[in-house]
Length: 98
Image (cartoon, rainbow, N blue to C red; front, side):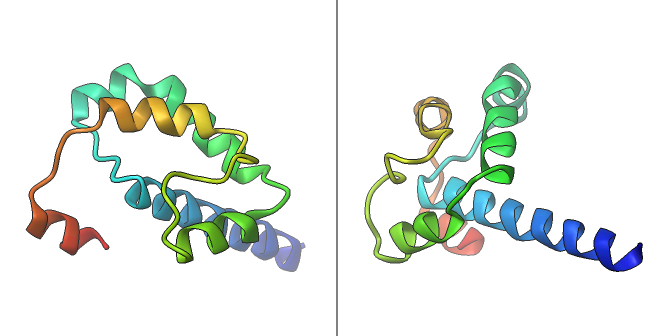
């Protein structure tokens, strides 16, 4: 049973790391207040990334440096709404999170 749980946890961790990479790629940095008010959009990104059928497509997209996320992303609209509400960051903060 432990192997199954380890595989599930590993998959979840990889998907959430990819989600964090997508947030950074789109320069999405939310204030605490915005994160609370946008929790539905944040939840949508978690669910979409966790159930994504092709995470490699997202990885390739971001690794190419293409803007935004691929059109096949189920949470593209949510990521874009989060980006619109994002707090601008200072250049040194952006480097620290990359």
